[in-house]
Length: 379
Image (cartoon, rainbow, N blue to C red; front, top):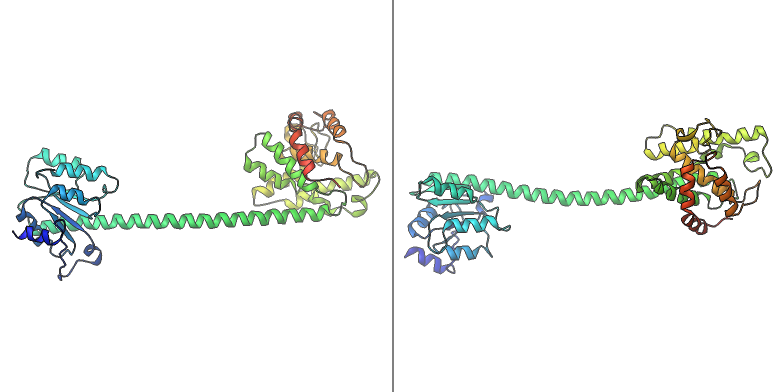
């Protein structure tokens, strides 16, 4: 028989009919169509109806067709409902329950007219059905519609996959750029603040220590890692305003006069003015720190005389660690205090100069504070 001869010539599994007839378009030409029907006449009629397609595979044996899915996937399946060995329902169920084949559209070939069979076919995942005897125009129209949908779905998946790759690549580049920008930002801020600090030859690693102390206390206060890191960076700008203080006052080896003290206090206002109207969260935090880190819990600080929780928490934290670092550092006007003496002074100012809760957190964090102190030596 003619169909058996065709199947033998193509390894008893598939035949690919290379037609010289004009194809609808290149994409449809590349679509692989699998026809599974145990009646030869049905296959021959469908092949004739679909002669404008170049890649058609056929099988009269449902089991062979089923096995072929493990190594060759069609773009669409025309599947007879009632066949020996494995019927169309069983093959459809397998195709739709397998992640590798579930997106293959299935059109049932059936002479059945009962609603139950058709309903079951659609429940299993069929997209359409063609009734026997076949109408050539109807077969082509239905197949063409579903193949175009299949092509559109494939293109969408490819587009989404390519888009995902581009998003990953773009995200990676942005992350690398952000890391680079953050490093540049940190170094720029550090060097800017260092320019102010270098006028005071006794400060040494003051900026590094203040940053590290600040981050420890901020985290213990319940700030997020991002918030703590931001405050740590902002803390390096707390004394930025000192760049506007005359050398004869900033570097004076003895006690300042009342008039000189008032000028020195202006470093908070000068620094805040330099950081005012910042567009970033970092600069807004740095502005609060620069302006208010010399405020006192009891309201006797400067420049605004803020009291208690009216002092921004960022300024309270930096103000505390700044005093500690100043106490144990040598300055032009004083010798360094011992750590024990510095801690006693801070404890004595609990509730007066400093936020009581912050003092408790500071004392509970002394091991980390001491490790930072040892890491960044005092000169």
